[in-house]
Length: 261
Image (cartoon, rainbow, N blue to C red; front, side):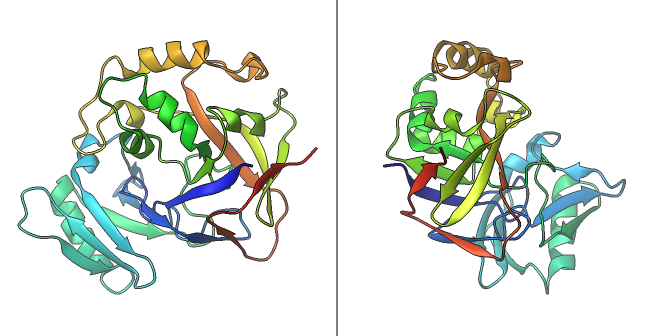
């Protein structure tokens, strides 16, 4: 029986995540606290892992209920703790010094700052998929692959690539599925960016990562998956939306997952 094995939230876009036992699904479909904040430069451009390798060097730990971040800057003696609401200017000043240019921390507590604004639901992957993909790369651990892929929802009790059932063979239709009592629509396989090619701690890129990934992804694509949904094979995990706008509901570790027939 497929079940909810892990929930991961990323309170500041491109920063380290935090694993939780339960998560509130907001009416927009976003998980509460996920990508609630994002860093922007003076031009209004987002400062993220795609364009700023240096961001991988930051280590962050979040206390969600206390609304604090413990931030470890490279070469500093100890972490600095900031309140995300009350000490935001001090956090911005610290980040500006780190990046070498002025930045601002913006907040969107309703729909966050996901890459795909048309798919505000959590990204979904299975533990078995992460295990399989990690095996394609020498000395890669499942946790390292998890940190590279940065999905929100991890499914247990299923074989690799089970989540590829959560998008339709046709781009104009969706697949309905339920996690606990919350219904979602699976939209498409998630297109990956440059971030998974990098070591999540150092930012050092593996020049062969994408080539190996694409070759293996194509070779292991389940027979029942329509290859027409893959204009390229650098895709993993599933983008989703909340099926209907509802009052806030909770996801809980252990929730059963079912596809609607």
